[in-house]
Amino acid sequence: MGDSIERLEWRYAVKKFDSEAYLAEEQLEKLVKAFNLTATSYGLQPIRLVVLKNKEMQAALVPFSYKQQQVAQASHVLVICIETNIDQDYITKYFERVKQVRGTSEKIISPFKDALVDSFSKKEIAEVRQWATNQAYLAMGNLLTVCALEHIDACPMEGFIPAAYDEHLGLGPIGLSSVLVLPIGKRAQDDFFAEMKKVRRDLSESIIRIY
Image (tube, helix red, strand yellow):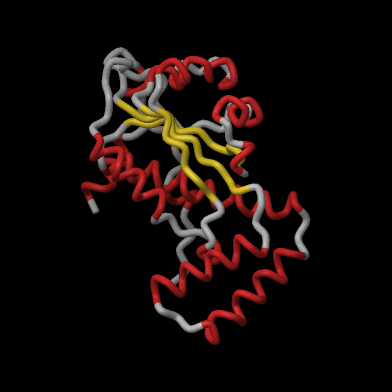
């Protein structure tokens, strides 16, 4: 418990990365696996992760990130995306995966699958997009925690222009839309934000205990 809290105290939203420092491949793989293990509603995983390691492309994204230089400086930039088409085929494919991995029979799966297909068919596109976006935030939180535990610096970003990211990364044609950005790497030694104390509510104000 102490170690995990200490690591969470250590992490902060990095304002300046060491542009010469790169994460080891095994560090990146832990984050990729953590993303894939993130809990999502119904287990449908309506999210995908783009892993960018290309300084030229990273620099090109800075104007579409409200000039936040962390995008260019970072070892890698993780872009959390949502699937833009959650339809019957998508849901059916998920349940085929369930049968493959767990050996669950069609008889058991069908009622749940049919209920989900029916439910999603009645939702507006904006409603499905918001639902998928909520899952992206779950993934972001999970990644930030794992980054802290693994001593990987990160800076979560909502401030960017998704349409421009989608165009530059070629996401639209593959049915994806970017919703969150997470530059990762190693903090620069002269990032004075690293030494600032965290500003949080007192526990008495943020926690309601019911026993």
